Length: 113
Length: 117
Image 1 (tube, each protein chain N blue to C red):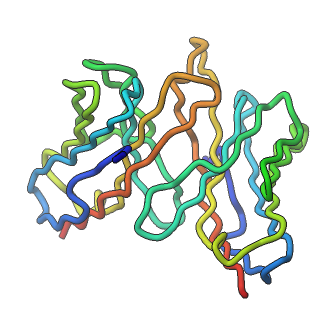
Image 2 (tube, rainbow over the protein chains, first blue to last red):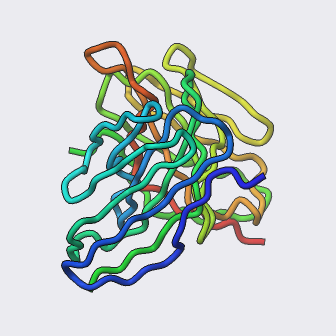
């Protein structure tokens, strides 16, 4: 029973490089989210998706793109990485519901040099 | 402008005693509040929630209190155990102008709880 799986777990990039973070969930959840966690800032929402083929901007979307081609996968892309994107990235998923309880992956630690 | 604030970065408690973690918010449109617990190298896990129409919700050793007039909530852990040592995040959700929220959560900065044996 995997839940939410994020790959890779760690990555080091040089400024200007691109990469894609993959999130996969096996709970048949409609909603999926990407957050970043920075020291002293808590988790901040980057983008989210309420269903296959849909995406929307969160609180801090600049510099990121996302795609949800399949219900179980949510991809986060960095086209040209910047040092300000050094962070820990968390993916989460949930059913529509109140309260909306989100289930998180273990995170991806990204360093941009 | 942080809408959800946890002003205590850390809290240290003796095993068996009560742990009280606090959270303040500014947005009166929030209608649900959640607490998440996070261990190192893991993602946050849901702990307990409370609706804005209630003032207390209890689940085993965990109780959340909501003071809507003060825009303040607290998580009580009684008795505290060493395994409770983790980062605790307060989060809030609410409907936007269109009447939907899609479950978007606004998180506080987190409080590191250390329970000493």
